[in-house]
Amino acid sequence: MRFLEPNGAQRRDDSEMTGLALQSLIVGLGRAGSGLHLPALRRLRGDGQPGQPGGCLTVGYDPRGVSCGPPAGELILADSLAHALTMLDPQRTVVHLCTPPVVRASLLGELAAAGFRKIIVEKPLAADAAEVKRIRSLRLRYRLGLQVVAPWLASTLTARLVDIVRSGELGGIRSVSVLQRKPRFGKSLADAGHPTAFDVEIPHALAVALRLAGDARVTGAACTDMLAGDMSIPWMGTARLLLRHKSGARTEIFSSLVSPSRERRISLRFDHGHVTGFYPESQSDNYAQIIVTKEAQKRLEIFPDDALATFLRGAYRRFAAGNATTQDFPLQARVVELLCDGKTLAGVDSAPREEEVPFEQGA
Image (cartoon, rainbow, N blue to C red; front, side, top):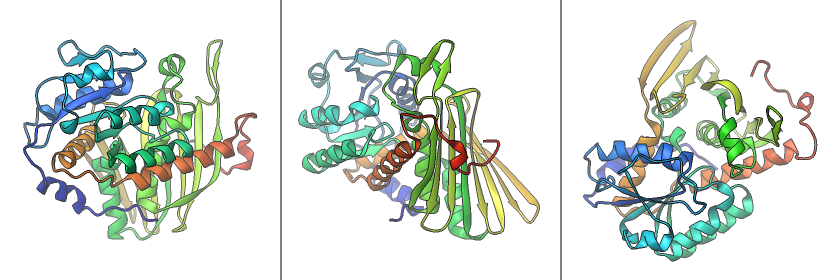
């Protein structure tokens, strides 16, 4: 199974753009829907390019009645899916399914039955393999165009990493190490939609590792609880995942949701050098950095990297062009499979035994 996509994929999307004005429906108005997708849609509308969201308003519906308070005037709120249908044409509406992964398939079925076919799904695709199977069945039955939110895959930084791997300028890739830290106490205490720390940030990093080094198997995993005062949230503190790729490369991913600071760092080691990249740590400053080291010489580059907007722009262009294929579905389904393997290895009834897993020190 190969996941390294050709660089020409985005250029083909650009050439297929049409002038079709697409409407937007955000289902799920928590952090992802209100705090990430809505502002990204605002930026896309400012582009004034063909194939982007039309109009100046988006319809929003939250099945759980949850909302992070979107800015007034930017969202028309619907109190049900039937209400949303009175304002939208399903055939030219892109749905942003931003609910937690544990309730994906049932909502996807409702949306498909209502006539919606263009659907962007928040990561991870699902919480377990059984849910992926149900989603795959719905996709085939209704011929859905599904795009799983993958800003790290759409990131300019990731594109540069792929170019370095493909060029061979540093030799073969030997290892991938990803470190992600951030504080996530409030959301974890308020919302149980993500069952473990494996389901929050690791799907981003895992998809990138598969894109860079090919398919893999899980060789080790661990997960800890989140402690906040006298509160304890099982399996929502930190998570580690070790992979062995078929190519021989190894990957280690570490995610902390209890860190006082934020960081998203990826390091690649090659036969003849190494590369360190820093993804934007939040939406407040969309700049990435990359440091390439070869023969004791270092090259630093800093560049804009609005990855979510880039991902959504590409998804809307594909939908506008009538391209309903789900190009990354196999990769995203594989991500869920490997996450499930990691959860099984980490266990749920006992503390993680890190001495059995050779993790790198200092992560």
